[in-house]
Image 1 (cartoon, rainbow, N blue to C red):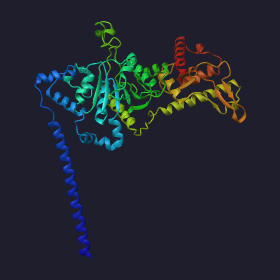
Image 2: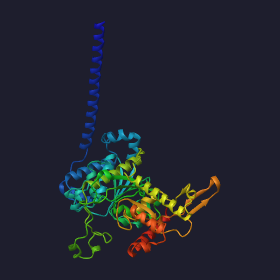
Image 3: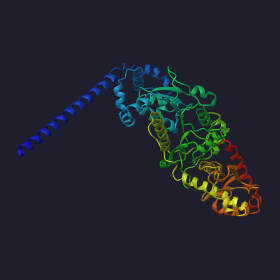
Image 4: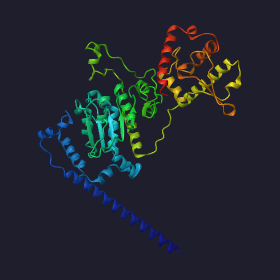
Length: 503
């Protein structure tokens, strides 16, 4: 029996060893085949022309000094885009994505058409990630050129690219990595009057953009792009400010209505609200707050003012020259986060993002404070009748409280400017009943008539005094606060009323 058992073990071991040898031989043969195909493709590229001819042929790269390697990459790209490129080699290059996204998901990505508007730090990293991941049709829109200061954050630019248009720099460098990608270059500034042309369909079949990336750092053009995409049902994702940011753990993906802590996102959101766009646009933003020792936006140096009008110092009249501190790693993180969202969206991969860390709870708390404040006011107006507040609702959401605190009051008390223990209360004492009743008996609905433009952001300590002297007292804000404070609050409440109609 022992002898028979040993024989079986030996047979099994022999079978396993034989299987391993066969598998190794098959894998080795497949590897040799792939290497042979790759070598055949490289060898099929026509011999390089002389250097003078190479430079003449590569003028399309826009000012960068052309070399023979550039020509080789261009010739390879021409063959690849003409279909003379082994698809198995492309699939091998994209193998990790294919396994992750499934073959069907990768096919969607390879057939996708993505437009990237803005090819600086954020846009260049986003474009590189999209091309490397399989997107085969990319339109690049940017009017600017590569500068020396671009090199601390640009994805692919080198010293040789300084002075070249950013769109051509990206094409030039990425052709060496993904020669099958078709680039449509638009070296011009995006603006509202040209939106229809710049975001138009592409190709013989008139393919609409599957996604548009907003990597613009100018408010006017950013708002124009987002408004156009919103109105024309073009999927778009917007990158907010990476300047002065240093904490990658605070970068979030959320709707345009989400609260953020940088000036670019706040201004963009306010402008869009005035245009009727309050939600539906995903954004990449940072919740990082400024603090002692952290970088801040610097004023224009005095010596720059001596050179002429500020408007004359930029590359375009509309662009003011500012010294914006940028840590080179942060635009890359923003750009890859944007690209990641586009890839997941196009392929249909699940992407349920967490809400902004620690902030949803705060906004819910502010909403509860408004609810409690309305109940106090109503009981006071009805002589202390607690039954009247049973089931009372307020026509305000946590998103509304976020908007008020972050966008209108900038996260500060309107009275003292303090940033801690904030709450929302009525600014003025109501002159008539705040109760709205609909229905009767068990079907009765009770709500407060409060509006966003009735509320002011102050600290909880200030709210106690405000409630005692104004809401449940006989004083007006003019009798409690100085004139400058009253005027400031009134202006902020007027701003709130402008946006309120778009809720």
